[in-house]
Image (cartoon, rainbow over all chains, first blue to last red; front, side, top):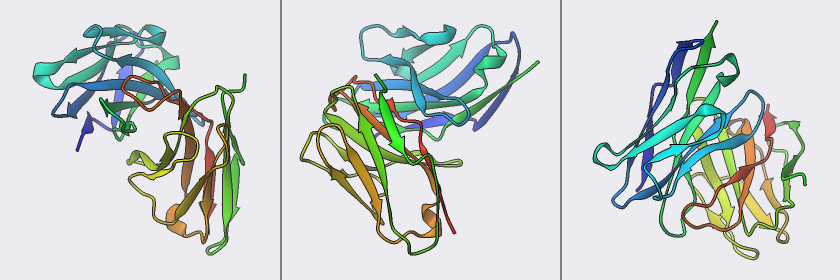
Length: 113
Length: 114
């Protein structure tokens, strides 16, 4: 069964520092991969998605992620953290076919002034 | 265009009570989903409806039932609530249930079962 593993349930960075949130997937076929963000007391919204068009995917709010098949990874990065980036981030996978999204357990990002 | 709406926003139940969580979308989407979110567990799929007239179990269906009332509405029912069902429930929808389709989420319903 396909799954995603997010390394680190909580990541803390200083304002202006690099943000790196890790996601590894297990899948026997190339998957479709997503990053969602959840701000406090809100629903989830899409940050970016990989659908095999390009390995480097740019999303909203300056985030990007790179699909690396050899490492089965889809890590999320942002060059410079802002206080408004504090939220919970979820990686999700869907294999081609008629299957729903499978979510990782989430990583809470704290940004320190 | 409200997107995905959920009612109620917050509910307190006693063990054994029943209730229905309502979800509606106005994006003409075919597929709808119910998830629960618990600390440290991420989002887990309860039930989904790939298209109007169909429903399927997800990862954690026990204790829940669903109804796809029409293309817009997908309700989740707890027949006899248990404390283990205390959670935040999210409804989502997508145009289809294939590959790269984006899922859009509602704001959630916080349920506390005493």
